[in-house]
Image (cartoon, rainbow, N blue to C red):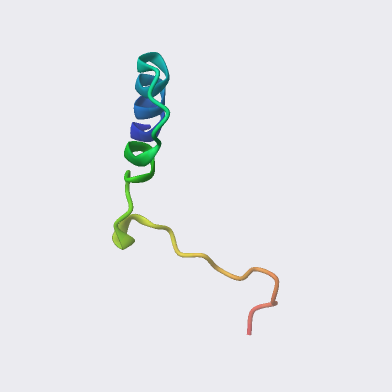
Length: 42
């Protein structure tokens, strides 16, 4: 949600730099864990 807000504000201001958008939730603790669902369990 914060990313969308920052993107909209940047568009309205004519800002093309995406640094503020990419800096949202870059801390490791916020990222979801990726699981490999292609292998059967066990």
